[in-house]
Length: 303
Length: 123
Image 1 (spheres, rainbow over the protein chains, first blue to last red):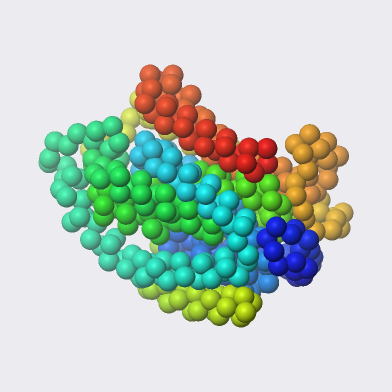
Image 2 (image 1 turned 120 degrees about the vertical axis):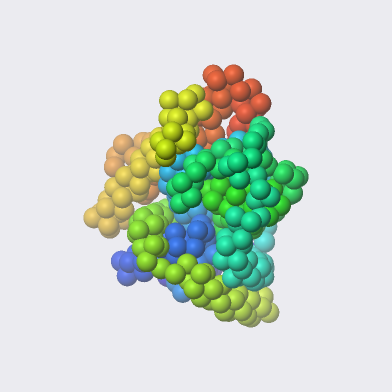
């Protein structure tokens, strides 16, 4: 599919020829990524990039750019619902977006200077903590009710403050009010997540959601919705840089984006039939294997 | 009971949330339509898939007018990228009109950062 005539990221003489077969494979990969993302509550970039790079031979920089655009699509689609329902905390999200946008711009600029094998190696290394957090995700989610510090207790008169919020929890049939604690921690983690997003094309929700929940004491549901709300702006902050470098390949990216959008729609319907804890651990294990494969490939190419 | 504690959709805060919801939905919907139209044109016309840096905005609109598949795809992707930017602008204007100047200032800072990225990238 792709024939790289130059390995330096500064040389844009890489040609890409996509056949109808590749088109079907890419849209299928995007759809599966969208389904997995919807089931696991992630942007799906950690799955899409390995499929494109290892499975379809797409150069790393193009795969990252494709993933960034896909992340914008899923984030915008999901956030529109979460904002309307009042679960996503817009004030907190916008405040943290200052940090994520800064991180994403720096990450996007850095990616332009790094050769593909280095970028692949960094991606592989980042997959390991991602897999660990994904594996432990079920534990965090189960403990959410007990770790909100009593702030969500409907019997306590809680003032949400400027950054806190109140939302209606459908599953518990009650309004949940919370205050945001340790904003500096949220800003720090958001900067790092934004940096990884700009550099590697991942949403970074797997880092932000536990941080918002455990450090900022935001209830799990609001933390996930707020993280998703932020991801679109984070990805957009670096997407312009990828556009400018000519790394957003229209046909490749459009195919993947449409697949991911369709997949996330399907995933939101099928996720009630899937045991989320099992799926989370299965894909966490898969991510470790992908990390090993990508690191091996990066080392071989680097050598 | 349930209805009494659900957020009031007519409150000013919720109106802003509804505007944000609509702006995101419109952005994703329009870009999806452009992407599908572009894909169909590219497949029907058998345009080469090979990519490259996007053309200038003026050239992009000219090519879109001619119904070129790649131009439709580029425009769809650009619109998709601008959707979160538009959402930030909606929040900025909405909170300014509601008198929430602190929130408007935060939105302004985010817009400036996105503007810097735009200038660094395609400016």
